[in-house]
Length: 329
Image 1: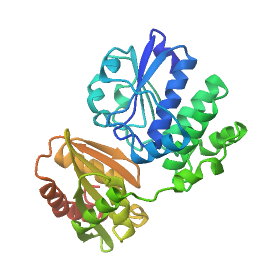
Image 2 (image 1 turned 30 degrees about the vertical axis):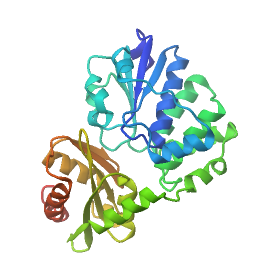
Image 3 (image 1 turned 180 degrees about the vertical axis):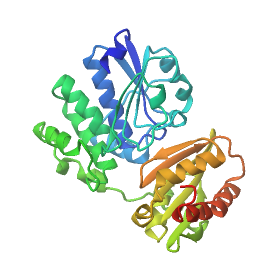
Image 4 (image 1 turned 90 degrees about the horizontal axis):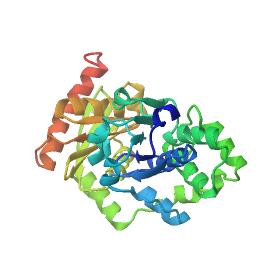
């Protein structure tokens, strides 16, 4: 990767919208890696940090200097982390052509790789953080304590507190242990998920608006719409018995659609990233993610939120049913 940036003096690190702890940590680690190579960098986070990332930053007093879209324009190169499609990068997505581009990612599908000059990509990794951390440790040998704590949060978040470890998870955890950072040092913040009033209201509204139907005999497909907290609402839908949860959120640049899939659905080959890709193909936009969780950005899908949710609820169960029967999967 270093060779791609030989002529670069400054670079921008880009992560996906509403950056979760894995996106935040991998962006910071990528910025540190660039520093090891003598390249100045800034971090561009469209829509800022997610609730979970803000909580981690506040608890540990971690500051992240974010840069503007003008800084991205003025950079010599781009490093995209934890993002599977250009639409996830907001206003910076259109800039990922014409500049040297490096991708660091672990999503099962990635549409940015075809534009990349170099990539550190492994869909079997538990998190993007562990890929970035492995590269940083190889180049720089050690990291400061704040960065190590943030890295552990990124790993714990995307591996669901180590329930889904990946290729490099144990290696980087051992490296962090040597640095004196253990799971116990951060697990309290990971567990501190008491929802505030706004999140609780969103869950109730989301569930009250939910439309449900069956597919593949025993899969329950659920769709709703909400103004925010789509990830929390989707998890609540799984908790009450849904196998596929789809949450439509209206944004200035178009709809953002969160998808979650239960283990029952995944066992039948119906994964969250598959659902997101299907919806992207049907309604326009780009979607992708993991088997259990995925995201779609649909800027050209124009109905009112309740109509958008109704349209998806009407068509998705049938498409899933055909997939279960081996038709057009």
